[in-house]
Amino acid sequence: MSVSAVAADPTVRAPLPVLGRDVTVPLVTGGEVTYAALDYAASAPALQRVWDDVAAYAPYYGSVHRGAGYLSQLSTDLFENARRTVAEFLDCRTGDQVVFTRSTTDSLNLLAAALPDGCEVFVFETEHHASLLPWRDARVTYLDAPAGPRQAVETLERALADRDPHGPALVCVTGASNVTGELWPVRELAAAAHAHGARIVLDAAQLAPHHPVSVSALDVDWVAFSGHKLYAPFGSGVLAGRADWLRAAEPYLAGGGASRTVTRRADGGVDVEWHDSAARHEAGSPNVIGAYALASACRALTEAGFEALAAREERLIRTVREGLADVPEVRFLSLFGDDAPRVGVLSFVVEGWNSSHFAAALSAEYGIGVRDGLFCAHPLVRRLLGSGPGAQGECGAPEAAAPGEKSLNAIRVSFGAGTPDEHVERFVRAVRELVRNGARWTYHTVDGRCVPDTSA
Ligand SMILES: Cc1ncc(COP(=O)(O)O)c(C=O)c1O
Image (cartoon, rainbow, N blue to C red; front, top):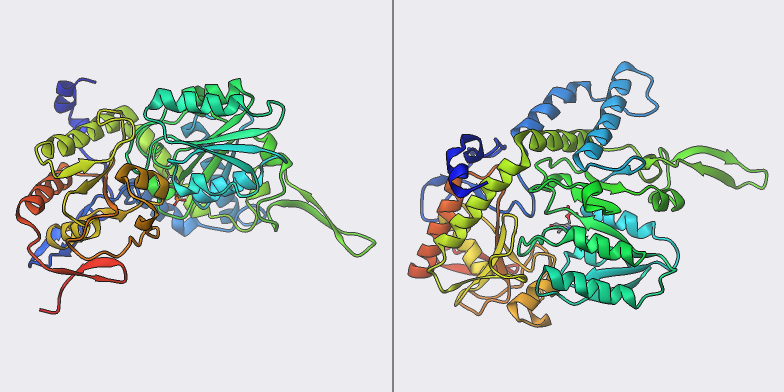
């Protein structure tokens, strides 16, 4: 779609209604302002539609699977329908399984626990820790950060060419970076993996909220994503894809729901026959409301149309980039280059500022919620910042540094389908003012975070 078509299309202009759009927060400088939630990459607000669907279902909520009552059967139907909705949303192949999990992290840990014996894993060092770390029992090859999509494919091909082609192997790759927002060449990486007899799992935590994800068209073996980044913050996630490794694996959790029959043996032990379906890895009472909410979000985004959502987001990205283009103190972080295609996730540092201080001022003086730190992708952010391990910060609790010190962390602004233009425009104005005039308030460090000084 051209720029002029985007401007003329009213459906592209409107954000999708989300909860919290009227919430006001106090400013340290006095008064209140509507909260600008610009941390979608961490957790997106709930879509109003998701909330309404959940509220409409809640009175009918009942135990699932073996419950004999009417509401139990209704809830079981809704739960299994949610599975089908997710399969459609992901354009899964016949025979693929959709397993409901707690999150992307949970999904990838489940897959890690289901790897066949001797499986090798290939993962770029640029991944989110959820993709980087779960493969503890496998032989893992960490691939160096590529300078572009083509280099990513070449790097993977080189690494796979050296492996034993007869053993099982898995490539884990992100669809969109949670640091730079850049899109990765998933289809090409999948082709490279398959050409070398390896399988591939797509971490779609940041991709699925912004672009359609087709398991069939991308030809990935599995995909993982989280409800809370997809406007459905009710504690559910998904692992979808090939059934064979999942069926052959020990259940992720052992317990009711995963077991078909349990029999006491004459020698005193028990024999268990586990389910072959997705239930094998869903032991315990499932999160029915979470699954239902996630399916509702899948339907809402599909109906809104990803093309329109992406076009609008493109415009918001341009608002940020062009609005700050003449502020040399602001440096955006990028692996593939400033113009690489990306989702609405942008990380940056501001010369002369500590990132925690800058983020605190955006919040306290402008009512804008962004994130600062290393974004659970320490190797990538350190590489982009050119900093060493000294920059270490825990996820969600960036390293303490006094206001004014050189920054060792970055700031991330992220947005999506529910973001009004005004939030992004306010962000651009706030960054410009802070760089030009400095903070209007004083801040100090408490428990590793910069906070406004309220003692005066
Ligand atoms: C690319 C990516 N993968 C995985 C995750 C982990 O998601 P969750 O915390 O929902 O498990 C995140 C979260 O930020 C992410 O950005």
